[in-house]
Length: 292
Length: 273
Image (cartoon, rainbow over all chains, first blue to last red; front, side, top):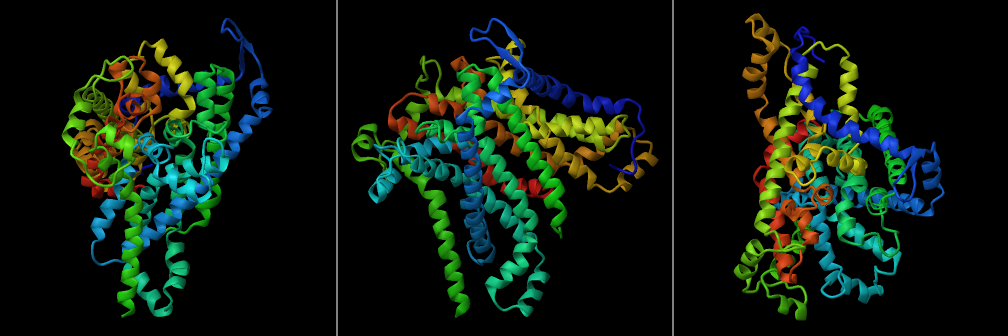
């Protein structure tokens, strides 16, 4: 907050009102509805409903397919974060070093960032289709790839589709982070330490910690929420429902299965997960990273 | 000499990166310039064919969709209305709300702050079913308002503007107050001109975000008249080369925006990381 401010004369409410109004109607109303759904049991025909306490939560915890989705979401977030983070960092370090063609590399590596996940999914669909798919043929020749039946192969499919465009996001932010490191720090470190690789891990990488940490959060959020468009255009959860993320499962149960209670309970579980990640971010990691 | 070798290695790694990022799109583009018959017999293509104009004009103007009621051109129109609406509405409401939060002594300030920022924890994907029910209660299914409003209900832009305002020196307001400037004049004459870069960056970010929406339009549009490009991709029926052409066209608007405005975009977002 500012030290110098306008005194309250009600005009601040004029500035706050539009956003608060939109949030109340289009965000808080649905959230309240979600909580209502989560603690309500509806009969199969939608005629009546009654307070159900934690029954919906007990139901999802006893449902093995919920744990399948949970397991997949965790694996998916972890692998996507690892792959896109390391490739993004590797490319950013190289792009930061080269003298010639820097902006050409930058432009060509950045633009997949703008493509919608659903569009990436549709494209991946062609590369993994049995009929046209180059990658399908390649992997099939290597180890008999078949994502319709083999869970591991389906994982590979959605991980490749999900990682591709996110490499760009990691590249952009790592490059910006590298460029923000002061030249004098790097020059001083060259005098002290001759080895390029050791210098990177002891000087440059610690200075990139804020960026790395920011990207971990961005990548996890991406894997949780934005990959909906990718799953829905690639495996749709196949072979069974092993490649359903938590968000995708909640959507299928709620919108296709019309089980509002279960979908509501699943949404609340995800809100708790997001809350935990956020608290972790502020309390634990932010305190341990040195900015500047 | 070692310098020469290491620079070669740099370029080599970058080239592999380029291959991974560019080749998939090139293959889809090259394939989109062949006839469907050719693709069906020969698979994906790496070299250009000669059906470019045929395929692309057919996709743009032909009636498609489940009931053959919509052309790709109309979908582009819908996507633009939706993305522009989302970007405009978010920029205006967030700019104002951030001003109200930073520059005023507000009663219950902490409460209002949390009321706005806790919403960052609840993305649209988490409240999709109830949002649909609320929209149908308000009679907003199959309208542009229905496509725009729930996605604009986000505090992400407010967060960016708030960070930016906090970086503006206090002396600006002190000087303006000495001159007797009231809060409305200060907002319009001082803050908005100062925030121009930030406004542009947030607008671009929200435009691309809005254009790329998939799940919400999928649920909100039971009538084909409101289909958007990104959701239409999956549902559009047509021959294989029509689909390739549509995939390529669908990515052109956001990609052009990001390429031409990348400096602005990165500056705006990175300033406030």
